[in-house]
Length: 228
Image (cartoon, rainbow, N blue to C red; front, side, top):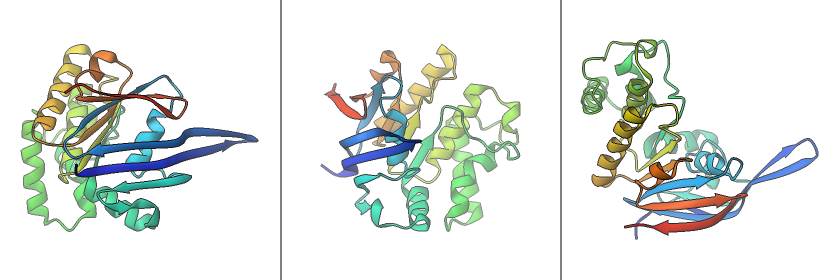
């Protein structure tokens, strides 16, 4: 199996005053190319910490994280940022759009850090905006969009660099049922096209959309289930 993300005996330790919190504790997890994982667990189980490590937004305190064959622990901050911009797409619950930029510009943000000709980047962003149903909203700013539309922008932004791994943290948590279903249908399409997805959710009905589910407890793997 072609491995996209490989966490090997990873721990992430935070110190709060005199207290040590092991958000991840000797944690191992492997994601193969084209797999679709949901991550579940109670509050404090380590789900968001896991996603932050996988997204190279945080570094392990111990252990190794290998992304697309590169040991992230051997990279300095600049090289880690460059790897993140090339290999990863991240979708947040709160969208994290830049309010001063319009839809097209927000989608293009990851390309600002890559050597992509502006005309090519804009064409790619326009195609993705159309794909997520926002082809007629290119000039609108985030404040002029509904929550579901903002999340569609965030999805298009996550795809614009053609990432090897797409990570989503409660991507439907702020959405109504109908809009959440539409966003999950987009994820299903991406998986059908061979994209590799890992998303955190607290809803069983959402987790069941994925082909695999990892359940966490106290920074450990509680169980891993393959559905299909």
